[in-house]
Length: 296
Image (cartoon, rainbow, N blue to C red; front, side, top):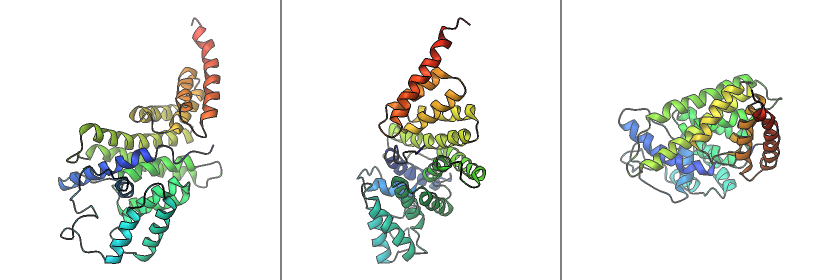
């Protein structure tokens, strides 16, 4: 099955910007910091600035908080950051050039994170994983990238993937780290409760989706169902793949009514899963009908 990597991704880019602001505020108060710098950079290009993060963790701060960057480095970074999500090829080109040119830049975590998003949006999954892992190595509390890696890795695994069990363990670790850190992020000034809750829920949904896929790959269908149920409750319109895998897991455990419901939800999304989800929903309904008629 070929997953639609782009589906649901744009809906969480703005959430990452909110979490980045909140995590920086937490860091100033002594709590762990977090947030996806690259996704936040993409969000800023969509002109949806809610508040300014004035912590030293924000590379856009004034020079009294940050060591002055080389003028050309600063210009290259801002050019990379300003590329819209509709021009990912350009963003990738600028990001790769930046990393080659400025090997000690304080913006490297930001650029790696932004590149990871761009690679995922252009279906370059291996490059996404490599860039994402560089991003979290430089910023271990990048919750958005931790969640995205945790979701992407198990989706990319096939029967021919070498060392698949260790990769699943890595994905599980990423997801659990994200889930553990998200509650520590403080709500930033200027963001209302609904927006902040939505931002956290979207990121938690990605992490639970990743855990659900890890469990599915391991043949733990009950565990997969539990995690994916949480994911779709947190973000019902996030990702058709969550509903598809939830349907398969329920089908494999003979929960045909639940399978039909999940496949039906999946079929409401346009894309490469729509046809198979419609067909699977009908099959699950037909299997569920005799069970509902059984007097026992």
